Amino acid sequence: MSETTAPAAAPVVAESATARGRRARIALRALQIVLALFYGIASALPKLIGHSSAAEVFDELGWGSTGMYTIGALELAGAVALLIPVLQSVAAIALSGLMAGAFVVSLTAFDGENAATPLILIVPLALIAWARRGSNADLLRLVARRP
Image (cartoon, rainbow, N blue to C red; front, side, top):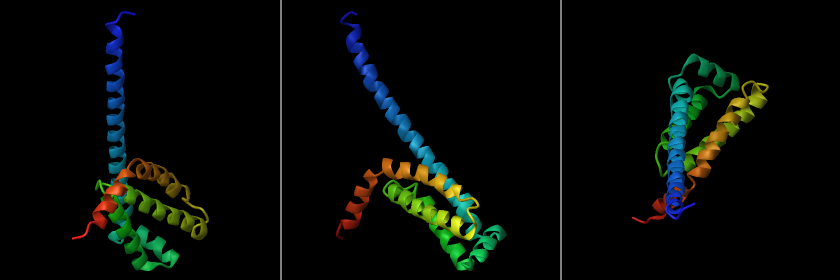
C-alpha cells in the first residue's frame, strides 16, 4: 500500500460515519412523522369527531363521550408534540404511557383483543424517546428560565 492511498481512506471513513448519522436522523424524523400522522389521523380524529366505532368502544368501557374526547385530545396533542423538536422526547414518553394504558384496558376490558397493537407502538416510541433524549434538557432549560 502506498502512502497516497492510506490518507484517502481516513476521510472516507469519517465521511461515511457522517452520512450514516445523517441517514439515521432522517429515518428517525420520518418515523416521527409517520407516528404523528397515525396518532393524529387514524387514532385521534375518529374519537374527536365522535365516529360511531370509537363511541361504541368508549360506551362499552363506560367512559362515554368524555373519555373518548379526552383520549382523542391527548393523542392529538402527542401527535403534534412529536413534530416539535423540544417536545419530541416527552411526547414519545407520554404516548408510550397512553399505550401502556391502552394495553391494560385491552387485556382487562376486551379479553386481550388487539392488545398487541399498543405494545407494538411502544417500540418506536421508546426509540424516539431515547434517541431524542437531549431535547429533554432543552425543555428543562426553557421551563426553568425565569421571565
